[in-house]
Amino acid sequence: MNYFQLFDIEISFDVDLNQLSKTYQNLQKAVHPDKFAHASGQEQLLAVQKSAEINDAYQTLKQPLKRAEYILTLRGVDLPNEQHTFGDTSFLMRQMELREMLDDVKTAKDVDAALDSAQQELTQEYQHHFDLLASQILENNTAANVLACDNLRKLKFYQKLNIEVERLEDSLFDD
Image (cartoon, rainbow, N blue to C red; front, side, top):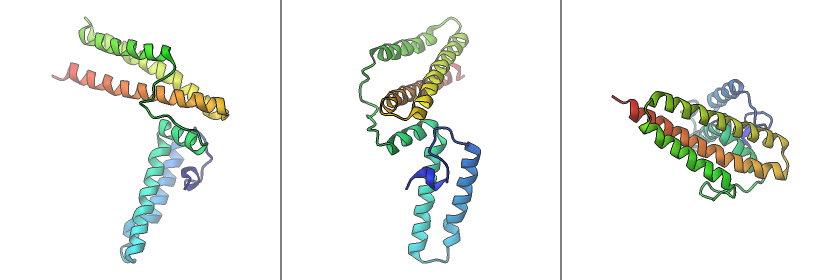
């Protein structure tokens, strides 16, 4: 089942999240297991399965990185796992620099300012890669899809780093 077809939308990186949510609610209402309370056991099971499929599709399409990954999968692109090493040594160096930057926040004289600066830098870099990913997916050719895979992995790194920033913030300001 193609998630985009299920939601009756065009395969696109840009989706209308409000419309996606409305369609999700309508689809879930149509197959809600309570509607099948007096149906056969098989019909009840099918309703539960369909509801789970709709939920999986919604969770994938509403999150940009999952949506990008799904689009690339639909295109037959072989997505390397997250542990696959980058050939991009400059990005590997940047990862180390960003981790050092977060370590430096802990010992900064002005922790608030250092944390704010780190968050701004991460946000700016994330947005840069996000914009690249969007244009590469829109381009939709072999070379662009390969580059989109690389940017997708980079964006996942930034997501994890942002989670680390949140944890750091909690630990520094948890009184």
